[in-house]
Image 1 (cartoon, helix red, strand yellow):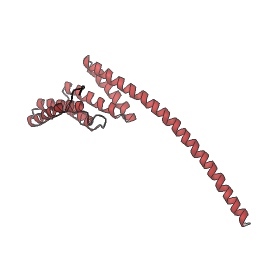
Image 2 (tube, rainbow, N blue to C red):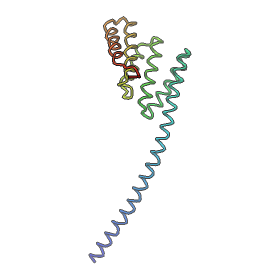
Image 3 (cartoon, helix red, strand yellow):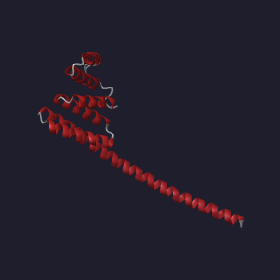
Image 4 (cartoon, one colour):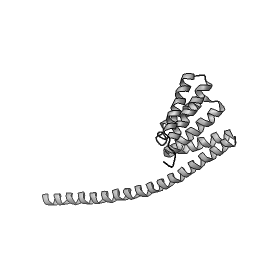
Length: 167
């Protein structure tokens, strides 16, 4: 009787394990299918964000500031949804530049800080230069001479680190 019970127990464990393996295998397949679909969807969203950022820049150059800000916010929200660091940094910088030109210095400084924190562009010399340049101008307009000089000195340091493309 013990063998029967043990045999019965082993059979149940084997069948349970077999079903569990099917279940795990099915979930793995579904995970790969859904992650592939999500990756393809994210790639489409990234292209959309990049297009929106370009459109926002065009609106800014055409002095349609309201549209520029609205489109930049749309690009920012989509970037946040998929954690697209480059899109977030570019949208933050775009908003900072636009708000600076409108005289909204406090909000511009806030977006510049967010730009600097984004990993995708945090070490980009051109982005660092632009952040310091705008900060320096804001501090000049706010009559904060020491901070302004410090930011413009950063600009000079960064500019000296930038190498021509052919080197």
